[in-house]
Image (cartoon, rainbow, N blue to C red; front, top):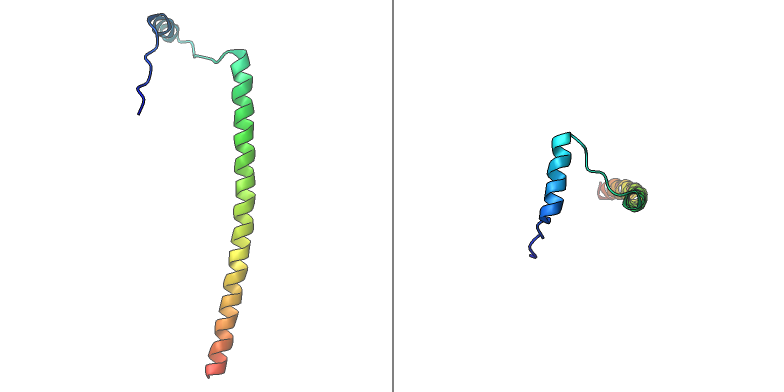
Length: 79
């Protein structure tokens, strides 16, 4: 694995001062838009995956019902 790059002394000092003041670190405005867009894409992907999972579950339930029905019919035939 690649080593993480240490923040520069200047960055480290800026973070330290911000923490001392109690400020939260915020992304730059342009980065915030990119982050929100990426989050929106991920949420969309999750929604699609959930829809697919629901469809698959419905199909599985139908298949189980058919299998149970066929088992019942076999039991009747075996008598």
